[in-house]
Picture 1 (spheres, rainbow, N blue to C red):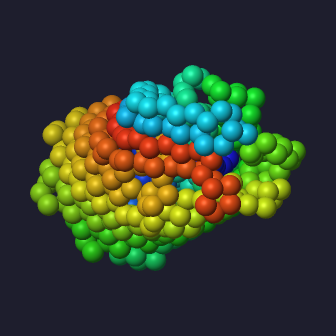
Picture 2: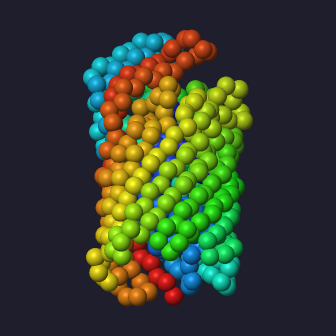
Length: 415
């Protein structure tokens, strides 16, 4: 999961390359159904097989084999405004400054697919598998961007292969657990162009993997009130490839990227025959993402020192009739960036405004649609590159902002 992706002054946010735009470079794009309610209640609501991505214990709520296949289109609007770049060391090119830098469309557009299968073995045991992503990103600055040493190209693809098992203890308690194999590839490029494009600050192409695990439980107070709790351990990814960093090139080096672990609590309440309320609180251990290192370099490639964060969401589901179901939700998502900032990580607190529909083709099959407008905030950014602890060789200041539209569609079938 080559997330070294943001490895040097960057890292970022989404899988398939767009920017699903959760905090840091977390990805919320596992389900079109969940997207339509801002993922409120997704660690307990078992409306289709994609629920296993948030809590494996939800598989115990299925009484027949279920399949879900879908994708989310991510259209990002990432901007840098009123930036000033300063190069201070002649050996890296002439002393140089550039004011009033502004760049639009840094994030671009991408599609994030997913597939899930849940299969009950009997009344107590169920197994499942899923393929999707929890992390990833793409940001690309123009070729003539003066501060390419801080912008450049950051491209990452990640895939999470999940295998899980669940066990229903009784009518109230269910438990689940499983393993995650996370693989990915990425590309990073930073240089001092347009002054000296041959002088590479960073050039990386690498591939790697890591092994994680997850556990969860569901408590059914009664048929109208359910609660879910899950935890996902994320590993440190080891990405192998050729790495050039500040003029030094190491062949077949290994980059280490620590990914954050996640904990989530969800509730679901059927308040009337037609309306259900759901909510979630997710904790993301972003402080684990403190520094990026490579075996062949004595000093860190990049320090981040992010902070632990939360996101909180609330949503509602309304059954219109036997054919149509409507849903809506809101999420407040805290940004992970603390004191160390980057123009390639336009991170801030974000608000999700979501809506969705389900069209029931038959008793067994349904098509889900979801849409979210994700609204970020203007953030004043200062970023520099140093030799040692004090000598600044280049710096940039500016204002970043990241907004996005997310569109999801999913087909689900229960046998």
